[in-house]
Length: 446
Image (cartoon, rainbow, N blue to C red):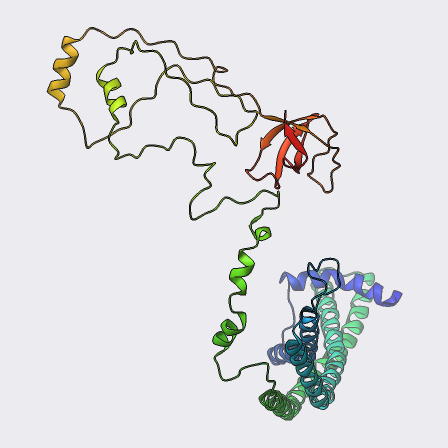
C-alpha cells in the first residue's frame, strides 16, 4: 500500500466503523447487494472446484503409488532370513518364492495401470484444474473492482454527511460558505465515481453469471467422463490380473482364512507374546493355575458347610488342652523364606445356611455351660509381619536396559516379586535401587 492509499484508509476508517455498526445514513442498492451475494458464491464454488479436482488427481496417483509400495513391503517380508544372526536355523533356506513372484507380478500390473491412467490424469490437469485456475484469476480482478466500489461508497456517504451538517447550520459565516462550496464540489466528484463503479458492476456481473453457466457445463461434463474412464480402466486392468497365487473363486474372508491357516494359534503360543513390558509373565486367564500357586489353603465356599473341627470350636468355645500339632514343613519351592507368625486366634467358621443348628438347642446349651474366658488381646501390628526373602548374587551383572538391576558378586538382593522358573526375570532391591534381574541363573539362596 502506498502512502496515499494509507492516508485514504485513515480518512475512511470512521465511516467504515459507522457502516459496520449501522450508525447514521448509508447508501444501499438492492440490485448490487444481490449481485454481490451471487458473486461470493461463484468465488467459493470455483475455489472448491479447483481444489477438489486437484485432490482427486493426487488421490488416484497416491493410491497407485501406495499399491506399489505395498507389494515391495510384502516382497521383503517373504524373502528368506537364512544366514542372519537372528535365524536359529541358518543353514536351511526359508522363504516363500510363490509369494515373492506374486508380489512382483502385482507390482508390474500396478505400474502398467499407472502408465495407462497417466494421460487421463493429465487431461484433468489441462481441462479442469487449469481452466478453473484461470477463472480464479479473472474473479480476483473483479473482486478488486468491487472493493474499489465499496471505497467510493464510503467516500460518497462521508461527504454527503459533511455537506448536510454544513447546510443545516442556521447562522453561516464566510468560512462556512467556503466549506459548503468545497463540500459540494467533493460531493459531485464522489457521486460520479460511485455511480460509475456501481453501475458497471450491476451491468457486468449478470453477464458474468451467464458466462459461468456456459463455462461450468462443459467443465463438469468433461470431469464426469474422465472420471468414468479412470474407473473403467482400473476395473478392466484388475479383472485381467491373473495371478495364480490368489484364489479368486473364494470369498474374500474364506480365502483369507485358507491362506492364514493356524498361524495365529502358533503365534499366540509363543512365550514372548504373553509378556508385559515389565518383563514378567502374565498370569493365565483360563485353565488351571500352577501347582505352586495352588499349594496354599483354598478359600471356603459360601454354601459349604462347616467342617467338624470348626463346628466343634463353634459349639465349645473353651480352648482345647491338647498340645498344638507340629507345623507342616514349608514347600520346596519357597527357599530361604521364614514362616510367618501365625495369629493367636482362629478365624471364625464360614457362614453356612445348610447345616444351621436349632436355635432352642443352642440357647439351652449356652445356659448350661459356664461363661467363656475373656478374649485374648489382639496381636500387635508387627506380630504377623514376614521377613523379606533374599538371595545372594553369584556373579557380577550390569544393567542391559532401562529398568534392570545392577549388582556385584556377593550382594544380598531383597526379592520383591519372583516366578517359579529360574530362567525368568525377577524384581528385587539392592543398595536402595529396585529393578529386574535374571533369576536363580545368577543368584543363589542367601
